[in-house]
Length: 499
Image 1 (tube, one colour):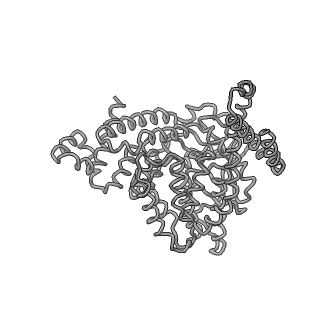
Image 2: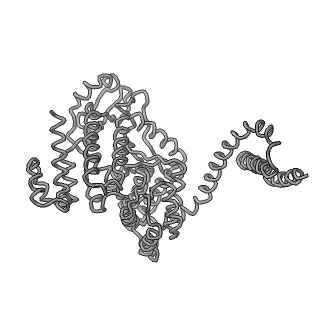
Image 3: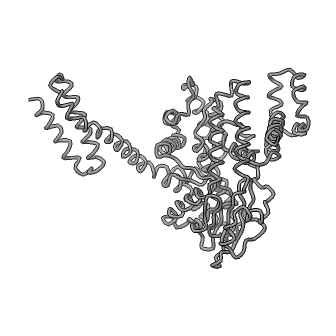
């Protein structure tokens, strides 16, 4: 019965959230009659549509608050006014009493001499308490709520049902690949339930921080950490939103913060997916400390390479580079009019291209950029949208530190500096892949040679150049200094083979 009641609550809320859209396709009397079973939620109609969606998700609570927060990253699906409203969603639910948590995880009592009853953070999935280990070390204890997984799976099942039903009733929704989006949301929510995964990413960022003197990540205490609770160093620092540093120092702090984010993205290939002022502290020694790694983005080398080319295309007004990158990551829908798309991108870029870099608002550019994508039914991979939004949000956070900060003047030279490294990395990956393909061919050489007597001369030459290409790949990857000797040797061998 609880499941049916929850389903009714969700359907009622979404019915009034999209009341105007339904009125376009159904007659007013039909829309009114259908709303009678849901009349208890009609107060939602008193809000504008974007606010209505946020209020509905907040009232549903549970996983739907998280779903709304994740949807706030999908400007390629939702209009920007909806996204901006969803960004206001606060995952602050009444905390579960500490005694209930300790009852669910009795082993925790063996670790601590004191756990503060009031949490310092409380969400639908987990809550965080300040605690003291028996050794006397002050730590942060993050604990998964005992019922979180069951509620998340229930709410995701309801969402999948509604997406399937709405796509059936309104076929154009299929163009936005909503089932895949829901699957991405489900994966991200379930990932948050595994705190050992979060701890592993914290360890990865902590090792990277050893190469970046301005960056600090809390230490994880693995002996007290599991999939359901995480114990890490307690961070005491100055919140970004309450900095007391003089204005002349703030510019340098803002640039250092952005540099940290760019390095994690373009050099580590992993980035903090939930950057907001509450998760960033300035320590006494001037380092930036990041906390709460529940949402972390991870890009494959090929996706990162395409995003780099896409960013370079935007910065250099290269529409061919932009569209080619979108095509290679599979974001272009079938039958898209590429000529019209390129024209729209050029019109969009013209709006910004003639402005000084110092006058370009990266966050505004991001929203308009993805609104154009939505117009052409381009749906980007979830991790790429989160990444683009993270980069845009770095400017917003940097402006909290230094009000006159602008991202493009810093980003463009950084991208140019990284271009050779990306080109070399891409060439090496492709060469290694090609070498592996030809390694398989080596195993087949004996049988190919035995049957080569049946080949014509042209076939023999094709085999020769195939083997030469294999050798080229191996030399390029493992011994590039031998390249000046290898190429002449191949040409000599080819001449001798003609005799």
